[in-house]
Length: 194
Image 1 (cartoon, rainbow, N blue to C red):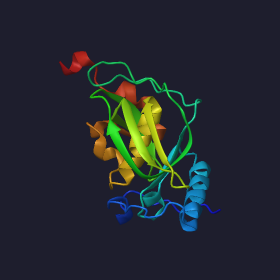
Image 2: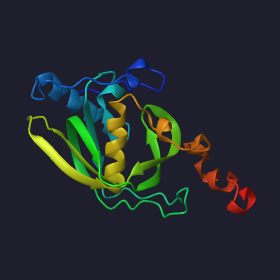
Image 3: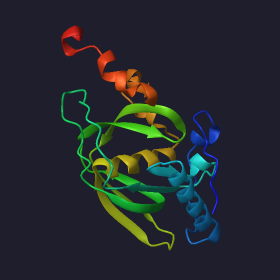
């Protein structure tokens, strides 16, 4: 296994649509996945898509461990932040597809290994179903909510050439991680904006 170089925002591989994998059981795909998992863990990420390691194929790996702690923020309409109510083990998805099961959206802070040092407040669907193939070519189908849904959507966006800032409603909510503790105090209150 190898730790792979991660493409950063601005690299052409991150803006193109990834190609479908014709045979998920090929040894090269198994090796790619092993290297992606090692790279994700080394970088302390929750997920990684093949385009992020300069391979334009429809392959993602992610995990939604129970120790993920929600960041309490208030949504644009004043609704409470999403509950990180479901977890997922380390998952490999080849040729994934997502079906959104609700119109409800929740805001949550996202980071990305391809956009290092930044966080953004991103709306995502609160309930999805995803399908895809595993390394044996067997079909996977799961429903996901909370962080599990968020990380799945985030990683699958990479396969369409989309980075999380493109999903944000307000680029004022794109901040450096080192400044996160100041974010709330810098925002005008509702009284000041009314």
